[in-house]
Length: 613
Image (cartoon, rainbow, N blue to C red; front, side, top):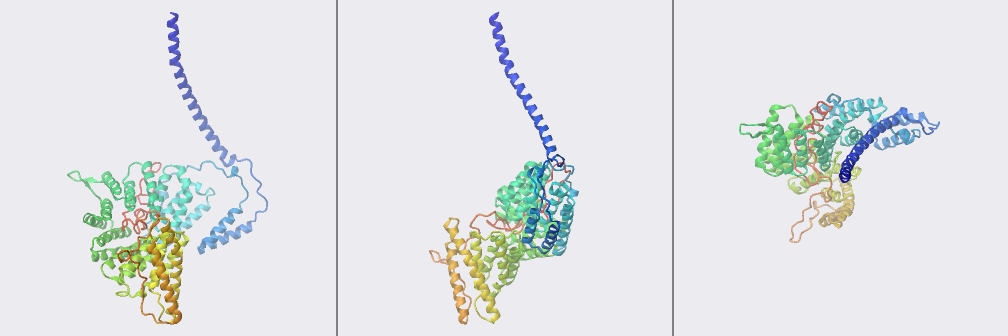
């Protein structure tokens, strides 16, 4: 009996002990969780303005008159667009703020008594189809309203009303390709949107992805859209946006998977159970086939998409222009150059009347029309459109070396200069080239091999049209072009050499071209000083390969910058730098719906730049 009792006691202890430990652990975790929640609550109270106690001495020498003078100067600098003085004055005004410790600056969570609803985002609902002047008037009106709203809220972007209008204004900028301003807004609103959670974070990811596409930074846009897909239920807009980005990144098979999934999700089925593609799906999948050079499949799908859009939404000028652009570029690539010219001219005209001639979309239409005209043998018209496209692209917020390089390639290698087109016509590129150089310098894009090969090509165009001769005024203008060309070549030489030396690309032939063009400039300068007549334009000879064949300059980007896209694209279809993806803007998907508490998508069903731009 004693032995039995001892065995029973041992078994009971072994059984109860682990249960006791589990119970104790559960109680301990629950107690810790409750204590943590209470601590967080106490911490929020501590961080509230009423909870602040100690503060630093503020001084007694604050000068309101000096502050007022700086504010007046700031208003003038803003009106004049003087970015340097604006930055300096803002810094000076911040420095005048009385001393404050981190204990005084720390704040609790922002107000959450606000629901992000579609009716809060009315500015971006406008179509912006009234032409350049009317669109700009509306943009500036929205900016003034936003400034007054900010003046009414001491909380700044912590106030949900201000944060919502900031996101609204950012989409206004996206639709009008004011990408620098949009970027600034997304930068200052990021922390607030992501910390608030749904639906703010979805709205921010979705719209910022649109911006990155327009900036030719599709590789950064893809993860943002993947995050949207994780945070929201399956939706055709999310799938189409992902397909659009991967199509621009040249991952065409992956893009088609997303486009097919979107079609399966919303498409109707015929009697045989096959999905009936709507106009969006026809456009998207048609572009995939076009980018894969399956023109026999692409052309009918794009034609059908255009036909349906004309029937169902004939007033949507921008979307129709993008579709004409897709169809026309497909015709051009498959050899139907005359048909392409007619269709692409329609795209250009629609952009002109709806969004104006400064939009990158208009520049893209000019670029594709230029290619088609050259392919159709209409070289002078092709050069006219090429120069127009170069000018628009040179002034873009999202300027990039690749499209500029490709346009110069058409002018120098595809248009028969000196035969059908007068070589002096290239002088019309001088001012656009200078604008592009200044824009790239401002954005820090002039320090790599991509810039080097572009500058060589710019200089070559100027060398061709800068021989001395003619009137004194003509000689002076030619001398100025020669100086610009020399400056470009001098800057390009070390960049090209560094790219070769570092193994990024073998650009020895570009270095040879630079040396040859510098020598040609020396000869032209000497002839001008001596007053010798010029017998004609001598193009810088191309270096010879091992078999005597001319060496062709490689595509621009030698250093992998963010992958770009065709010029331009609907929000998610953007302009085209390295490696140049499909040369046609991809169809614009619609923004994905935003989860509760917003009952409907925060974008009101209008793409935050994806469809309209």
